[in-house]
Each structure stands twice: as C-alpha cells, then as structure tokens.
Length: 156
Image 1 (spheres, rainbow, N blue to C red):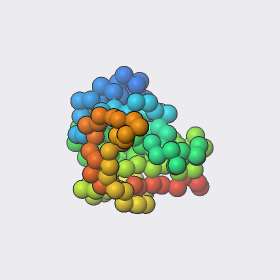
Image 2: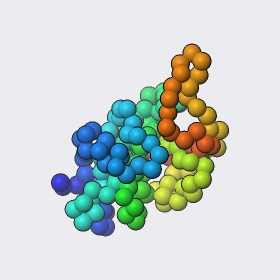
Image 3: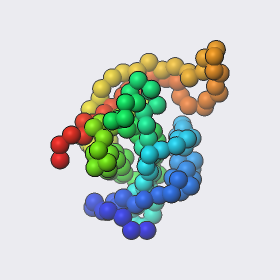
Image 4: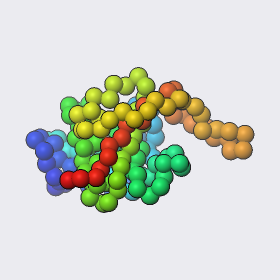
C-alpha cells in the first residue's frame, strides 16, 4: 500500500472490509460503525497500525450537512497514531468542504491525542442508552458519560 506520509506514519486508503476487520480486532469497546462517508488507515513500517471511520453525526440535531463525526478510531497502540488519524480526518473533511468535525470520547479518557491534533473539548455529554419504549435496542456500547470534541475547519 502507498500513502501520504508524516515521519514514520503514512495515511493509506482502506476498503470498508479492511477497516471493519481492523476495528473488530482492535477496538476496546465498539463494533465498527454501520456506515461512513470515508475511512482510511495508518501504516507504520509497512504495517497497518490504525483505522478511522468518519461519517454523518449520530446526533440528528448536529446533522446539518456541514459537520462530520469521527465515529470510530482505533490503533494497535503504536505511538502518535491517534493524533495522526484525527489530524488527517480533519484535513480531508476540510478539503471536502465541511465546516466542522466532531467526535466523542469516554469521560475517563484524557483527550491528549485530540489536543495534539488541534481539536478542542466542546461539551460534557451525559451517558444514556439509545433504547426507548418506542424503539428498543440492544447495545454493547458504553453508556457512561462522554466528552464531545470538535475542530472548526474554515481556513487553510
């Protein structure tokens, strides 16, 4: 695979099947996202060490056509891969004409990779289940409190 490089890390396109396989193997608490607008991976030393899926915001109120959401990001633990993927996702979204990109992390996480990629914490979000009386759902996803992080994409 050939990709855009930064130091020893390189961005590389992934098929949906490749991204799903990586996320299923490595993500701590989520299955792959159902769909996405785009996805790509990160290579280090010729090996796939990270994958990201970017799609429409899950929160319908935020889904105004100008915002994208990182719905999945995972790595094998290689240093700097998270911030590399967040930074590249924001750059791609900006080049596609989006004005903002967001993601959610668990409240127990520090957000160091997001800060390193130039993102800012926007809000604390109370955890809850997506299941309700009118539409019951089973999920293995955490229902704990989360943090929403974002990055404005206007400008160079």
